Image (cartoon, rainbow, N blue to C red; front, side, top):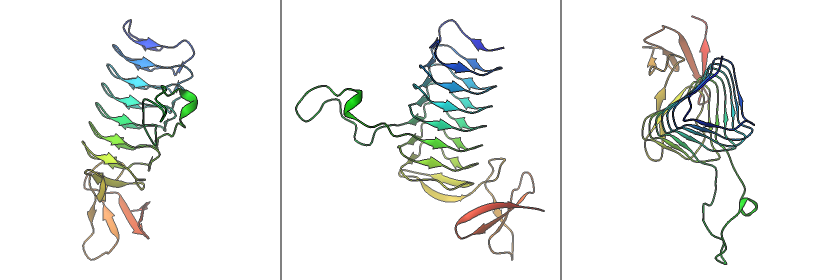
Length: 199
């Protein structure tokens, strides 16, 4: 069953997966496709043609502009903005109002399990790698590697996180080997990339 509250504005041309909820004052535009068990919070905006996987959470007042791609299990925090314009302007150089044909949409891609903290801005085109974590209030202007923990304006990598979202701790005496303090899972860093390894 899909739950859409009366005050939400959901286009009949949008696809909403089974078990999903769209809450008060949220808007889901034409041709947006949301997977199963997604939660779209109060006042959130999902742009035309946005693609969203299963089990995603888009919190209150987040703005997900087209042509964003959001994979399974992604968390988009309150008041997050995913932009879609390289050179934003209301008018052309001759003073005429810009129309859809006057600019090229570029999107943000968020890979499986990643999380974007409250009030962060992701400036398109950027890709947030799987299981990465963007700290609250950050401005992301370049791609974020999988499992990276980034923070600041502009966002910079300050560590690694595991699938639980907890900052990883380096294993003493084992350079490049990290452990999740919550799950105990091990991760290995090689050439600036992190991979989960068997315990």
